[in-house]
Length: 252
Ligand code: 0O2
Image (cartoon, rainbow, N blue to C red):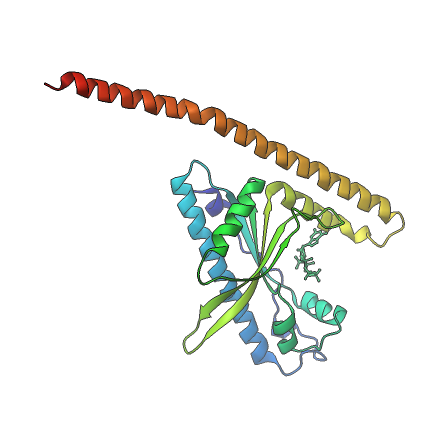
């Protein structure tokens, strides 16, 4: 069983469920909401399948698989409504569909920093993926210290009588970046409390330290690869030479 299979999980935190709607908002749009949810769910499936295929292929071809695990989620109802409110947008499904790019989200957690870019390139090269927006918070971390590579993509989903382009936010990051983001997300409730500047500074320091560790781990892997390659080449070279010599001596 690959790492992907063993830890693969779909985290659909409390879905955008029509039954839980505040009757004041998005009223009378149940069918549209159901359609939007279905499209998001299918968009996530399409992206996950693409990633799982890449993972299976890399597992077979390489000595290691750069994808540690994949998670996905549909944004919660509260979060969608909160974002529409914050942006001063109308409380309609139409506005959510048009303006919010992260209702469907897939998070890919990779082993090393260069794996993040490899996976991103592999997705970008696929004919049926349209990349709309790229935000590289690894090269340009957020003031909080947050690091991750974000892509907003559009993927086609084929239904019985029509097809739809569905937007999906793909966040690609390393295990270390994911570790920081998960803990920071939990601790962040203190952001508005007195003394929060100090907390923010300490969290940013943790993020920088983790980023240095990420770079060092990648550098160690690259060094090991450089060291092991010539050995393998030498062995193969020696084996090849021995084979050709024995062929040579056996020939009349
Ligand atoms: P969740 O729970 O992942 O749905 P906005 O979405 O309005 O905040 P924007 O520009 O649309 O801003 O998106 P951005 O900043 O490119 O990416 C937003 C997502 O990235 C967040 O989603 C988080 O998942 C993640 N993120 C961004 N900054 C931070 C950070 O400082 N700390 C952590 N832990 N995660 C971050 P949501 O919608 O906020 O939440």
